[in-house]
Length: 152
Image (tube, rainbow, N blue to C red; front, side, top):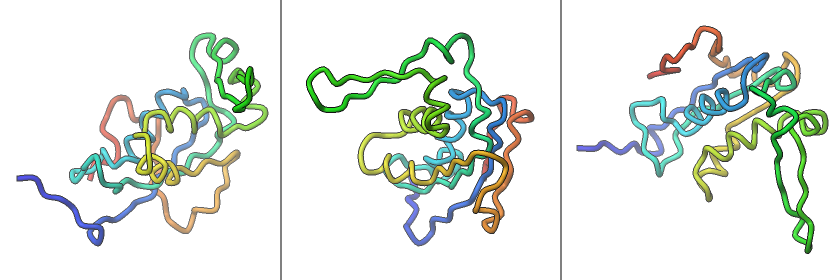
């Protein structure tokens, strides 16, 4: 029998990840699993009981292959002929958070639940962040090597 968790029983933890030399797609999969709550035994796809993730050094993130120059992100202004494109190289200069945010957003469910879960992602350039008082658990990406993360 499946046990459903009540809203009063849900507790959120905080995790901190250093994005220095991390590959965007691999980092995004780790973050999306934590944000959705898939690392918990009580996971249910229609309930938001994920954890908060703080990502620091976002400006030092990496892309594999030639994606840094060749990949394109598209958006539309809403006007006829208003499609815009930008490469990760230019996007990282303008908005350093945006490439990782887009990767994580596309791994979350669409709709209200996905938008709510995306607010649990906090990204900062540099080493410092204002969430030190939450005592986030540090996830070391170099030691991960295909292990389950933050298993409760």
